[in-house]
Length: 163
Image (cartoon, rainbow, N blue to C red; front, side):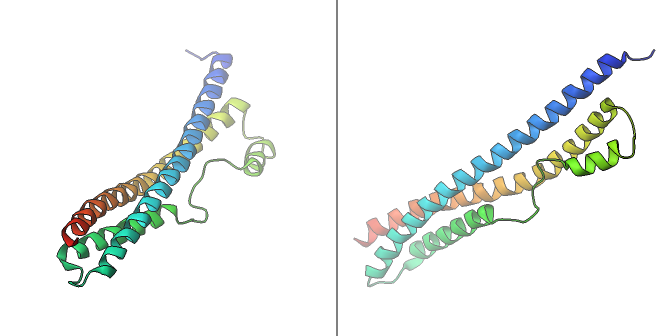
């Protein structure tokens, strides 16, 4: 049984719209991740400066607690910088209209619904590739957030014990 060309065209439009929405949501998620990472980096920097002031005033040296707290802050800052570090050509959230024109209009490869279906497929591939990279960045964010929390707790205990 043949499909109605109008329904096939409508399905192609909906698939392409959904692929575009998914990539837009992914780009917004990346922006949100970077924003949150900036907050964690700020918290880590402020907390590390407070700990370093206490360490500088201490006559007994940092001790194991101070060393572990300091290492937690270093790991937190490093993790945050890893998430925030700009990467050239890392993310693909759009498609090239020049390539689409060359592949579909100039070569007359098929109708508009075929082009939409192919474009939706490529946008889905871009989404999947971006997702793998985003998952790694979320893991580094979690490491950074956990490390700053650990550093704050251990640093607070160190400061309380040293006064």
